[in-house]
Image 1 (tube, rainbow, N blue to C red):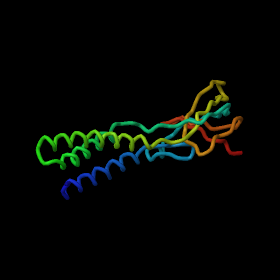
Image 2: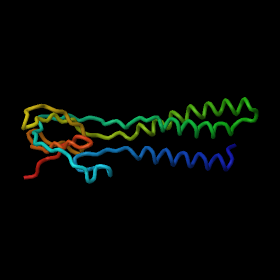
Image 3: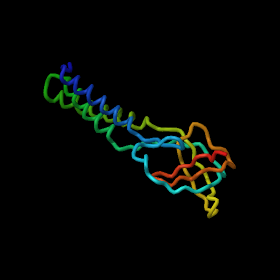
Image 4: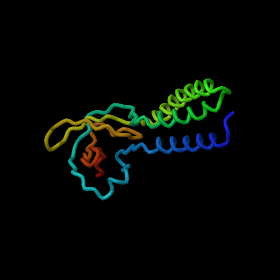
Length: 157
């Protein structure tokens, strides 16, 4: 049976894992991350030619698997009477925790769109992927913002 200390450790590790997975940046046309404030960005005008829905995967840093594996090993090693039993249950706990932690980290996917945009000045075609609740329609003139990340936003008339 797990003792109070191991339960506290697991609780703290779980909270840390949840905190780390919540750190995923999903900037879009109206959302910026803090380090982008005050940064100048080159802007050009373009036109959306087409769009398609995409799933934007979370950065899989492996942190979820590591934290989950450590937590699972700590909890698993609390079970069993003999040393060999505790080692075996710790290994099983580590594997299960790593799988769970990895699944939680991957759960931060976002829905968005991949836009094909014609840059009006050069006639060049570019693709921009960003998380948007609804697509920017074909034919819409947009600002193409070249900052730390490229994004597009509809031009307001």
